[in-house]
Length: 111
Image 1: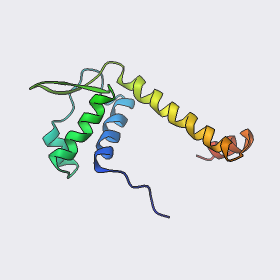
Image 2: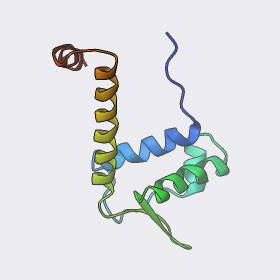
Image 3: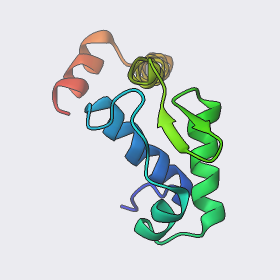
């Protein structure tokens, strides 16, 4: 079975979101520079810039011109709420294909 492939910029976004959710990065803490992230993830600077732009547009991070990119206050809540929204959508999809609540609970308990 083929694993789900994600874009390189999504991998960077996921990395920073995981760091924020796990509290390894806290509000007002600085992310690595775009150049350093590009190097760490073996991607172009353009790809790293796109990842940072997604984080900024999602209000997870903010940029200070000339100083870098920082974790926004409330970033963790934003990420967790997005995860819960996606989970609820997945539950709705499972119900939509006819699975019962007990079947869904059984599936979730195996995860």
